Each structure stands twice: as structure tokens, then as C-alpha cells.
Image (cartoon, rainbow, N blue to C red; front, side, top):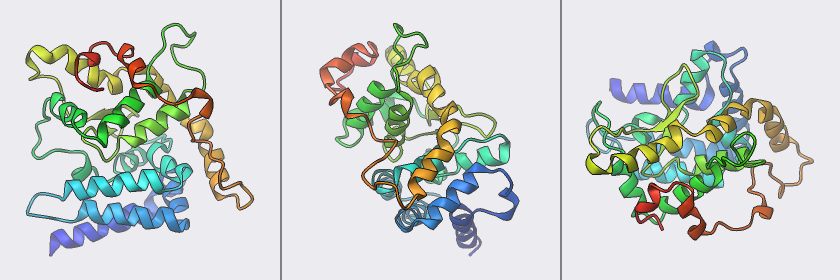
Length: 270
């Protein structure tokens, strides 16, 4: 009974916010904007319910949870779904709420307290027709470019954030690692990687040592209000979206991705 009550309270907190969060908490503002949009609210309610459901004691229906999360970020209004995922924070209360955006107890953390080797989710992703193209898109969209002045592609930020959001609900689901920063990583480490340690570190570094991803998350603050305004403006062309990948960039070519992260190219990502 207590567990059920706790799940209901968490559901209400995630969907409605709380009075104590008010006053400058952008994540609460993002949650309220999602609640005001019927499609965003319906998809959000669906993934929260799926991720809080209990298939067995001390477990969660992770596959169903991940499917619902993918639907949320694929079918939901991008300005609202991204505002929830990347809402800028100035304090730990807001950052903790951001970290809890998609019920990480089921969607992100593994069983127990020990992180698995990153090669496990990486191998699972490589073998998944859902995850593999999303990982390739993330590599292509967030890859640093040493030849540019700031090390990143021009207008890369929004494409990178969209590709990052596409990984939520896959075998390599990333999340914020604490409530004191905007650092992100998948739930894994490289301590038991054997002769694949270099490959493991390269994969984890896509999240933990990626200046373009860090920059995209860090500069989302300047775009945040405009994105919500575009979404909520009744006169806005529904076909227009600031978060769409530019068609000028052309389709991704898998053969070109081999040169982005040479260590990962050793594995059969393609």
C-alpha cells in the first residue's frame, strides 16, 4: 500500500509540479507548459504510468517504459519535450527535478547500485535496429570538429540536442548524473572492460568529454523562452519547428561516420 501511495505521489509531482518549486524554476514552467498541451500531457502521462508500473517486486517493466519514452520524444511537441529535458537550472532543487524528468529509477538506473561496464549497453545498442541509428545520429550531430574555431559545427546545438533526446528510451539512455551540474552520462563505467577499455572510454566520452554536447546544453537557456513561445503561439505555422534538423545538411551517410570516432569504428556500428 505504501509503495502504491508513493508511486501516486511521484506521478502527481512529475505531472503537476509542487508549490515549493515555484519561483524561477524553469523545469516547473516546462512541466506546466506540457500540462497545458493535450498531446504533450497525454504522452507524458503514458510514460510516467509505464515507468512507475511494477512488473515484479523491486523491478520495473523497462521495455514498456522505454517504448513510452521514445513515443514522448518522437511524437510530442519538440519545443515542449526539449524544454522538459533541458530546462536551465540555477539551483539544486530545479536540477534534481530535471534529473527526475523521465523517472530514472526505471528508465535509467540498472538493478543494484553497481554500474555495469559501458560495453554492455553499447553492444545491446549496436544490435538494436531502434538504438543503432539513433547512436549514429548522435555521433554525427554532436561530434566535435577540430578544424572550426570553437571546435563545433556551425548551428550544431539544436541538432545535437535533438539527437541526444533520441537516445532516451534506448539501451544507452543517458541522464544527468547529479543535481549540482548539467553533466550527463549513461548508467555505466569502464572499470571491467578488458582489452576493449579504449573503445569503452571512447563511447562514454561521447557524453562526458564532448564539448559540443556540453555547449548545446549550456546555451539552451538563451533559446528556452523562445522555443516555448513558438510552441504556444496560436499564429505559429504548425509545420515550422526550431528544433528540426536543417535539410541543408542533407541525409546522414553511415560511411562518413567511421571517421568521427575512430575507436568506435572498430565495432560493427554500421
